[in-house]
Image (cartoon, rainbow, N blue to C red; front, side, top):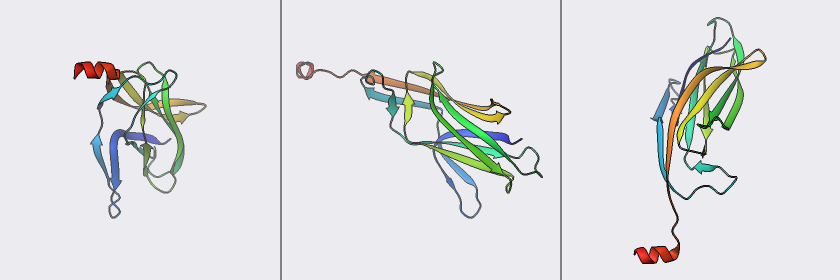
Length: 153
């Protein structure tokens, strides 16, 4: 069975063409944002920034090619699933493989600790093999009415 080596949440990454080595940029442990007002009722707010979740997988037996089904889920502090990405990791020809998931905007429901759960299909179910916590704090500014702004100014 394939094995999870590591997962990193970052702003971006680059793979060197000559060495195939990966460079990870701006690893993210905490996000602090100032915004205006809450999201409209029934909608989730989106933190408008680009991120990547980069994962390294390797063969369980270095001499035996194999594949595995993987899944990444972003869970809010209340346990709600906000993002999900599933895919297969093919290690038939190579002993290890990196998977880079591009995230074009991060859903937000409340302040607190979010978790990127990395899972591997194990029989009929999923087994958690990695967990990357990210603290997200959004400080909202309440929109003021034009009359209030004039009085304040």
